[in-house]
Amino acid sequence: MSPHRILTILALAFALAASALPAAATVWLRDDIGGPYNAYASRFKRLSAAGESVAIDGICDSACTLALIYFPRDRICVTSRARLGFHVAVLVPDSGGQPSVEWNVTQRTLARYPKPIRDWISRQGGLSTRMIYLQGAELARLYRACAR
Figure 1 (cartoon, rainbow, N blue to C red):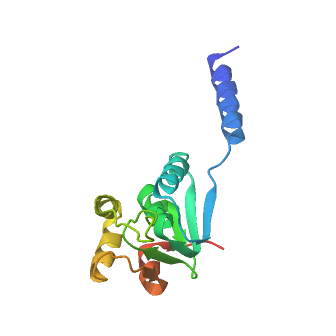
Figure 2: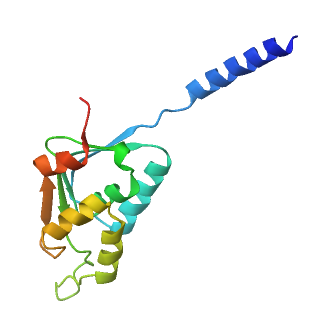
Figure 3: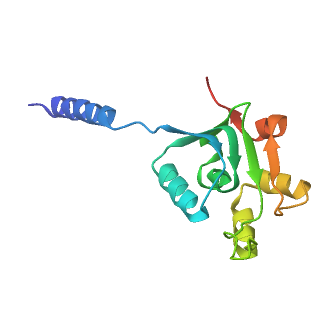
């Protein structure tokens, strides 16, 4: 068999094998109020490393916004319903019912958000226990619209 024929066969075999690999998917974040910081960070880190993209549709509050840290901007899209809610990192309320602010976690997380997000948060007066929302035209200027 000629070297050219062997290379052609190998190229075809490679193309067939590559087409059998699962394509990266889009993870839809729909009306997600957040949850445990570490669980969200681990999930988003794993999904992003796998090459997946994220689409935000509706509420994406609290730990859900960590997607902005772990997914590159070109793999994030938003719908017209997308609304990102940010606040300081807090621990579960203590026995007296009072949540405690985790300022170190808050500062580390804030530093990891993309600069346009940090700038927007700063323009809102920074993070506090009160939720602030990025949505509508402001959000659409930062991230591409999801394809229908």
